[in-house]
Amino acid sequence: ETGVTQTPRHLVMGMTNKKSLKCEQHLGHNAMYWYKQSAKKPLELMFVYNFKEQTENNSVPSRFSPECPNSSHLFLHLHTLQPEDSALYLCASSQEGSSYEQYFGPGTRLTVT
Amino acid sequence: AQSVAQPEDQVNVAEGNPLTVKCTYSVSGNPYLFWYVQYPNRGLQFLLKYITGDNLVKGSYGFEAEFNKSQTSFHLKKPSALVSDSALYFCAVRDGMIKAAGNKLTFGGGTRVLVKP
Image (cartoon, rainbow over all chains, first blue to last red; front, top):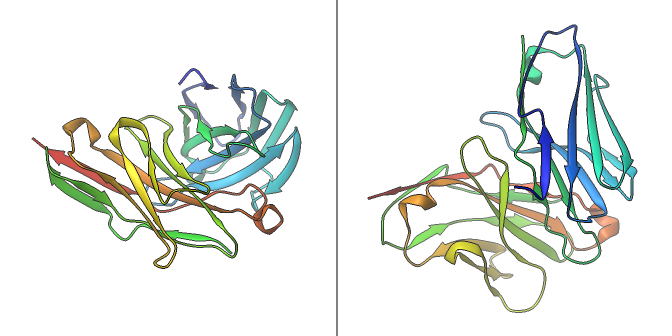
């Protein structure tokens, strides 16, 4: 899992806190993604960045704010979350135009109290 | 619109027996198909893909999958299952026509595989 790294691996935050999730890909890819994985629900695509430009916002509430400063780094800024936002947040990257498969990080297990 | 169905929530198989995990899909254009595996508290690991070419594709850890256009299926198979294959398996599809869905990947709900010794 050294291809895509995510920090922190675990995060507990209150509903009034502000925190950020970090993702870094070491694969030279040109696209990055945020997914949400909840128990008993399909994997949900949240955001897509192609060449640092956001190309997809899958109707995600504004309390989630992505940032992609360069093609290797992706952040997810969190504020005033709800308990139902507790989930595993996965980052992925891919090389669009050639291989297409997405490589995932280990995820951040988020618990909102 | 694109969608994926994995009809079985769980598959149980004895070690050494063949393993099959089913997947059917729906896309407007040409399908790009993928299989991933997820172990507990881990991210998804890429197993194999079909983009074009031979209908039978081989991937990591002895897994293979067969693309069947007429049945819109992409079942995952392994001739002889190992206890260590016990995990959650996801099928995914995207539309090969970039303008149709960009690079959005749609995942199935997952199938839990339990291989018993």
